[in-house]
Length: 352
Ligand SMILES: C[S@@+](CC[C@H](N)C(=O)[O-])C[C@H]1O[C@@H](n2cnc3c(N)ncnc32)[C@H](O)[C@@H]1O
Figure (spheres, rainbow, N blue to C red):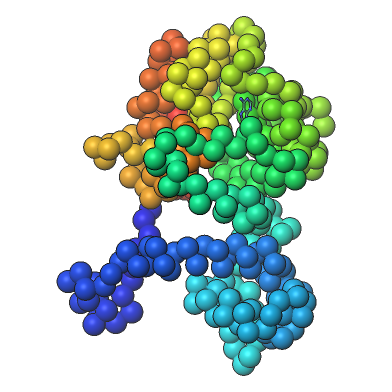
């Protein structure tokens, strides 16, 4: 998937075609304000206010305690972006905003908006330093308790759509009884599989600060003791021997170096039962030669690569790199399953 510039008339089409439009201004001047506008609108409760029936600029401004002129500018931009419909001085939500940005919708990414606005945005200032030093932020070492809460809520929000597709598509043994989810946080991938496989139970391994915040999020799924958290560290813990039918590591490989991922794969191979599967669920970095293992040379994969580099020093990996950890651990390669709802992301599966 790519972001493209769509001309609105023939003259604009020609101007774009002959490279008359300074596109870098679009990327560097327009995109940042677009991103920040969406984040602030969610954070300031603008979408919720409109849903509660506040529809004029003045009503919304009073409800959200914002300046009417500034809010008018924000609403103007968000209307162009398709988040609001404007008619007769009144704003209403569109399908886009009501599905994805209201706090209490199943699939809402609202939690991600708060984390990105309150925690991640200031990190972007450090990109220049990262480019010079190659040293990422390593945020897991520095988050405050409040930031851990935003982080875990964001991970839950980011998984709303993915977990459903994961639950349907993950190629796992039908008779599986025990799953380990490494860095599993809110546990929604395990919840989806447990709903599909009646005898499956799951252990969600994560850092203590994460579990403190994620435990109430998992509890909401009502899975009782079929899914339980276990405090641990994937880099230092042993996962045992011949225990699990399924081991999942979702969105954690990008925080680890190649060497660390090899070591995790080795421990996972030991911990799997024969016939068990190891699923590495990740944004995929397209290879420089364009080879992407069928996942597509996505804007998402390459921008997340830079983002994870900045935030964790490591970054995304290609399908080929991920599979090399699995084969080096003695596992045999199985499927690469992509997502319809999340471009640039895949489950890279290997079997014992
Ligand atoms: C980006 S989140 C992904 C959460 C979830 N697996 C998902 O796909 O939505 C990474 C998770 O890994 C956890 N984590 C980071 N380092 C870890 C480590 N060394 N051992 C275990 N968990 C770790 C974090 O606390 C966080 O919950």
